[in-house]
Image (cartoon, rainbow, N blue to C red; front, side, top):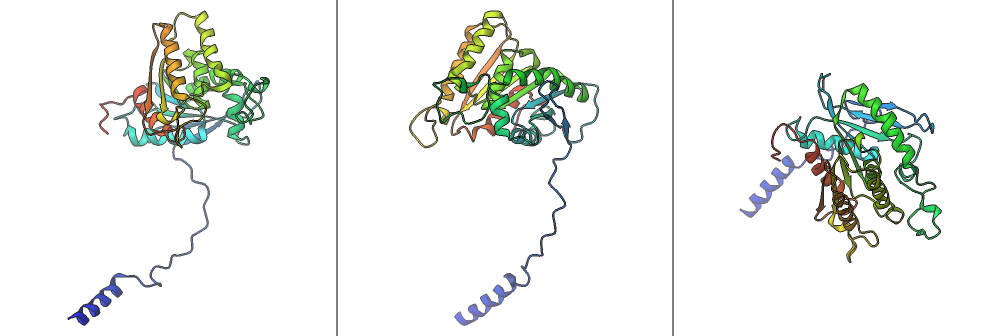
Length: 309
């Protein structure tokens, strides 16, 4: 009986297990080119002042047709990362307008021949810490900082009007989403040109930058204004606080900074301001962006029906 089982097992094994000849993979054909995201467009749009060759990356919802109604849009900083991420979130979470509005995604991209690290350090930051003799030597390694005012002027006066006119975007539902330095840039827009965007999604904002200079910028805005007409959503990971543990921050407490920024804005009692902040459990500076962006998008641009998951 045992020998019969062995023979049967061997026979079945020969039938079920492919031979080395049958599993030999064919040679992989040559590539036909890089993968391109469908329904996306790249528009070169240099800055007429600096001459820098910035680009606008545009994605429209699948099957989008010209519409008489203005289309909501989400502008993202750090386009190489955030553009495909937000596009995927709209498609997967949004379910063609059910859970998220079918918005256009606009990537604020740097020059193609320039490092993203160099671009964001220069264009996203409000001041130049290299001018300070007391700057931490291990924190500021880029060649240039503090040119955000010029970049914000380009975004507000060149990029946003151009893409809004070309694609019929809705200024009443125009969102900016940034993370880290990108959120620092969006916060500067908030307290200098708040009318450019209707909603501000600030992810893990780098308010620590240059001795918390952004709090001074907000105070300067408050001295000259009695209202701030904007909707603000902040998110930060719980591990972005300073504490013991491998995932916690060692120096910069982004959780405390986000709470402080919200508290400072609330003390102004701006009639038109709406702001909320969320600390996401189990997330750190590198992992929090997808979850935080999803929550921010559901907050800013809800779809036709209730979110059902």
